[in-house]
Image 1 (cartoon, rainbow, N blue to C red):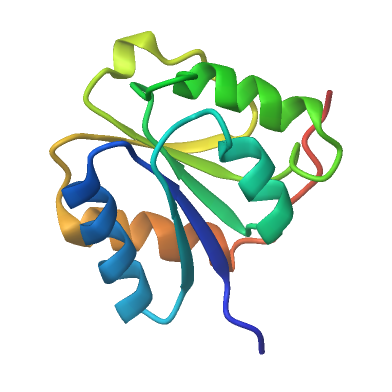
Image 2: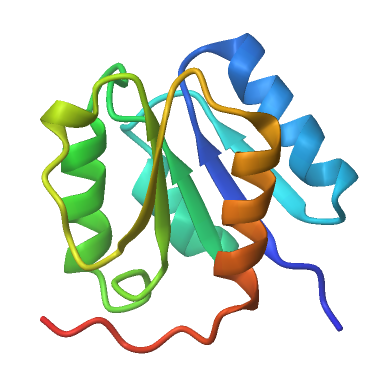
Length: 126
């Protein structure tokens, strides 16, 4: 069975490295992205099974990334877990399956990821 691919979109390098390390240690194939500008294109290119998305990003914020993902047929059903300290700014979309507030508990993050990658993904209605 192929390893599940997760794209981590996080501008804080230490936090991005931590998330990437933790998820890699759990057996996932992880790609880290530092800003919102290329995030949607990388999610599409990597055929991601899940996206961890910060909201406050340089270049393009997390809400803009969500809109971009929703606009592309290849990524509109890709589930997203928003991981942010600024959850009041989140514009919920059908792709947002879970929300974690920073700072997060590592076990909560790993549990949320495991639940999403094991769950069958239905097509998100437009």
